[in-house]
Image (cartoon, rainbow, N blue to C red; front, side):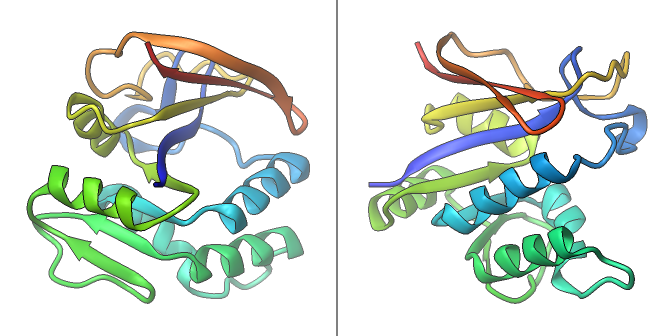
Length: 181
């Protein structure tokens, strides 16, 4: 059975994006980027909310001037199955499946059909999955930036959590790993 994991980079004050959806967080350094490359290569797939999927579609195309670390991430991302939760999208890109009904039933079946980790991408989707009790692990990657406002990591009330690990990742990030308490 797969484990559902929600993890994102965030500011020290808990925001994954700046005000009005602006990125706010600088691109990761090479070591942190390589960490995420290895992570994406090792997962069973990704479950996206519409907005995050639209941001990540950037990696569907080769980008002019992209460095090797970016090309490696793009290749890993393109190879992974993606499930996109949306009521407004009518179609999705390569290696992606549209999910528009019965989120709880779909995610339970997805977890039962796969092994390893399925990444959850997007705080609103993660909030819905948290309310349904479906997220098995939370990974908070803190970067040394303070945004002051924006889109928070936890889109709804923070669930009761238990810390299970902490480690330094890359040049400037600390990862805290929690499970539901």
